[in-house]
Image (cartoon, rainbow, N blue to C red; front, side, top):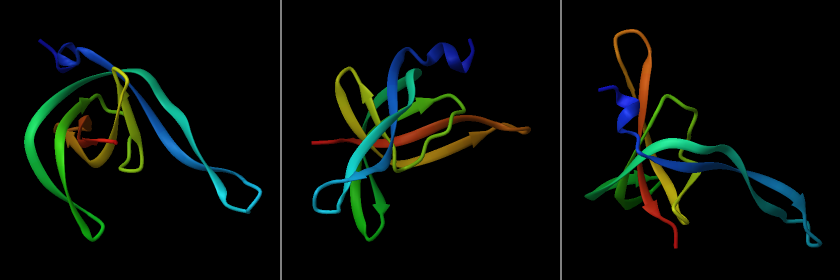
Length: 108
């Protein structure tokens, strides 16, 4: 059994960029697709405290992904639910990066 056979769900990963300025000169918020239909596996967790800047937040979900580009500024959509990426952990074998594990919380 390979690692990729365990990724039984799909997700959309978006990255944030500043759009064109509005009438008041403030940049519009814009999300763009980084990946669509990316194989993944979402698992609920008991909660893990993660330091984000000066704030401590609780991550309620863990997401397993292949070796892709993803950062803490991205957001993930699975089955219509939007999740905020709190922490990205890169796991490697002896030669190269193998997969990513991301700690998430649901965006409200």
